[in-house]
Every structure is written in C-alpha cells, then in structure tokens.
Amino acid sequence: MAIRKWHSGKLIILWAWGSIAVALALTGFLSSPVKDAPAQHLVEFIFALLALFALSAITWHWLGGRESDGK
Amino acid sequence: MSKPCIVFAGSAFLILAFTQIARCSQDVVEVVSATGKIPKNFKTYSLFLVCNPRWLAPEKIGGLYGLYQQFEDFGRTIGNDNAAVWFWKSRRHANDHELAENVDVERSVRFCQAWKLKPSEGPHLVVTTVYPDESDLSSGLPKGSAVYGLSNMSPNEISGLLAKLTDDLVEKGRVESPPEGAAAPLALWVRLLDATQRTINSFGCAWTFKIEAGPVNADLHACKAE
Image (cartoon, chains in turn blue, red):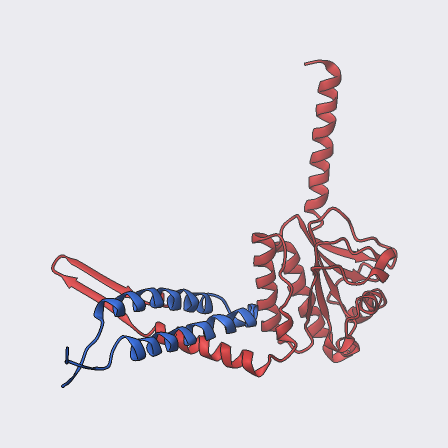
C-alpha cells in the first residue's frame, strides 16, 4: 500500500533557511528604487524567484511523495 | 597678554566681522555690468541663465519679472554660504518696461555656449559648488553641477523646484544632479522591474495586524500611512 510521507524535520530546516535567503533578497530588491541600480535589482529578484522554485523542486522531489509501506 | 597679540587679535576680529557683513549682503548676487565679477568664497553658486529668446519677447516680461522675483526669494533663503547669481546690464528697477533689455543675455549666452546648454530648454538654473570662472569657461560645466531647464515649467513648478533646491542647499549644502533617467527613457525590462517592485510594495502595505488582549492593544501596519 502506498502512503504519503513527508520528512517534516527536513522540510522545516530547508524552508527556514530558504525563507531567510529569499527574504534577504526581497528586502534588497524592495529597499531602494530600481532606477538606482537596475542590474542589482534584477539579480535580487531573479534569485528570490529561483530560490523559491528550487525549494519547491527539492521539496517535491526528495522530501515528499508516495512511498510503499512495505518493509 | 602682550600688546602685539592684542593688536593681532583685534585686527583678526575686525577682518572677520567685515567679511561676514559683506557676505550677508551678497545672498542674492546681482552682477551688474558686463565687467562685474561674480564674488568668490561661497560654497555653492546658483546661476540663472537666460539664453532662450522666447523669454525676451515683450509678452513674456511679466513672466520674466515673476521668475526674477522667485529667484530673488530663493537667493534670500539659501543662506549666506550660497550665492544666487543674476546678470544685469545696468542697475535699474527690475519691474520696468525694459526688463528684458536689461538682462545681460550676452553674458548668459557665453555660459550656455561653454556649458552646452540648449537655449530652447532655458532659462537655465545651474547650481555648482565650483566657482564659475568666466575666464576659464572653455573647461566646460564643472563636475557635480546640477542643471535645470525651466522652459516647460509653470510658475508653480518653478516655485516647487526652488523650494526643493533651498531645502537641499540649507540641509546638505549641495544639490544632487537631476537623474539622467529623467531625460533618457528607461529600458523596458527596467520599467517592468520597477512596476513589479511597486506592485509588491503596494501589496505589502495592504495588510495590518491587530492584537487586542484586554488592556494591551497592538496595531501593526506594514507601511506607515502618508
């Protein structure tokens, strides 16, 4: 029988660190006008997006899903 | 204290006092006649340059006089360390019928040519921390100068600009150059990024967090209301 099993401890650790990184990037992105340093703002915004994608992918692929309950 | 020391201290005090008196009377520097020099020893120089022929037309005399009055008020409020310079040909009442003829346009034009200012965008207001040496105009506009073209500005907008410049000069002792981006259109991706930032900021300002726990109440806002 297949059951859904989540590695909650790993999830918490991964998303805690990931959220801090994303929050820092977004803070940098929002704290000054884009016109002042467009390239820097672009990097910060893309990093925030990619980090969220990466966290989702890692979570989906390695930290959850259907697993057999067989020994 | 010895006698030479007292004499020296007295002389120094008198020189300092007279210098300060002279500077106080020079807040609005009206340079009269083609040979009149712009005084030195100011931290900033705000030059008003009339190079646009449209502003010399008879129907513009009222506007030009209004502009002079605004500039005069600006010169009086920016403090003793900052000079506001206006070029006249001769000393007359500013509101007479020959006001446009009395403005030393030729002198302004020399500045406009040397500093590559488009006459059609004038009158210009140039704020610089470097002494505008008329014998060395060929070296170009001093670095860090702020140039404002007033041709398309209404009297209210000019008044607002002068108020902002007054704030900058009094608080910081200098004026930031107008951003280049104001003249050149921004790239599409920069505008998109800017729009994204504004959207996220406005979304972030939309929430509030309230705690009501008996005698203790907390009200947390994401952004301070303007």
